[in-house]
Length: 439
Image (cartoon, rainbow, N blue to C red; front, side, top):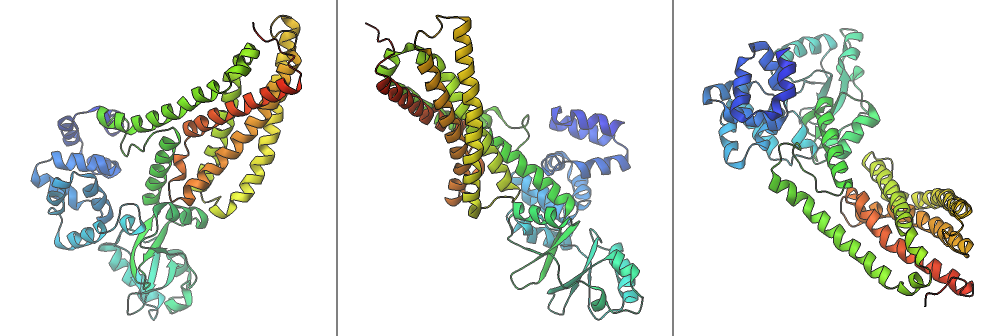
């Protein structure tokens, strides 16, 4: 019960209060609680401890978890945490810290179970029992390496237990297996887990030498982190890289101000666009009434399309080469949605005119046609531009998630006004100036 209650209030406690509550936990409960903390919280808690306690808790962590906690600590405090480790673990963690945090090498554990191909199953099981008592994080799978430590096969424990004791390992192991390069990006790695439904994936270097394993629990954290960053970017902000309540007000302002200013400056183009069509507005002031309706419909369509495509890219469902397929799909979907929205707009204006005969003047049919045709074009344009922008950003080497919904909506706002007033001008011209001109 204590464990559950502290989980709820942990982020609200000051650093000294966290340490005090942690010390009150029973030994067994405190270990479980410590392992369940995020790497950031582990680092904060470790740095608040006396040195003797810090030694104990740092050594309770697996090498990959220790590396994560050290990376979350301030740069000036990292050496103090690293010095708490025993020489063997110190070397393992130092090796992990040489990799970037967002690649397979930075996520892997250097402790795994290995076998030789010429062993028998009985010898292998006896050897695995000894390894399991030592420094092996998991034995979901065992990895068969040659004399040069190159990975040549993989076997599950189930397959070993089911095989005859005298059978050689080379007859049990799989030669065709999934592996990850040590520099593989964490997003690509997470897709490997999703595609092959594995509990662990071996990591190898460019020569095929076994370097470590990434387990499913590590990749779950990565997926959550990547999804959080994408959602924050799609919302029109820089990624926070920290829990919402823990990031300082100044950092929060910095992360949000840049995009907000850029979007504001972009929206100023809307004013410029409207200024170019003052004569059309003057001829039919009622056109201005429908501006929010027009631009919001296009912005919503673009936001929908960009969000769907960005997420599909993140899940590996869509790649750069698929841009034409996406374009054709959004062309059809956008046209269908535009017809639906345009029809609703047309019916609304005609119905409103019947209820309130003076609502839109004697030329309400031309106004209805202008709004309906504009909605069709703008919803279609919003879907196409929103779906293509992530492809353009990826082609330029940028994060597709930067094609945020607010950014797409702003882009479609400006272009939507141009489409709307161009359509109005066209109908005004070919309608023989049927709209009443003031003065």
